[in-house]
Length: 138
Image (cartoon, rainbow, N blue to C red; front, side):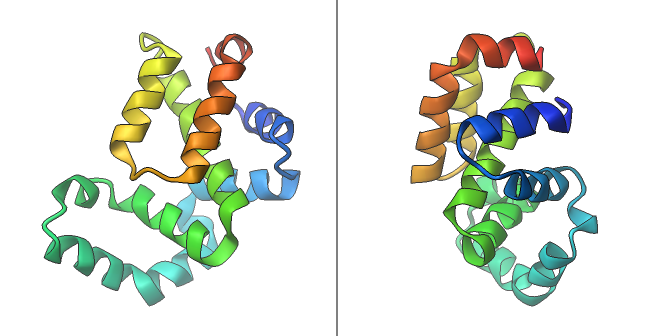
């Protein structure tokens, strides 16, 4: 994974505050240490997972931890946090999969998560800054 300084740099370029970026960095990398998220999971996680099971949505069931993080941010924190989370996720993916192009990383991210405005914004931003992001993440 890229250092948090890289995540913070690109979040700042998007106009995402350092506070939001730091919160999302911590949530993404250490979710069990994020008290608000753990309380959300205790309060609402079971029902979210049950809905996925009832819908037989096995693709989402396989990614429950990430799905719960996005649900938490969307319900408790708002759209800017969701954007910061998707940016963190894409930067991590770029670092973890050096053989993939940025286009392929974005396509796989889109395939993994349901479409949303925040992911579209991240997609456009990453594509516009692809060369520099590659230098920072690889």
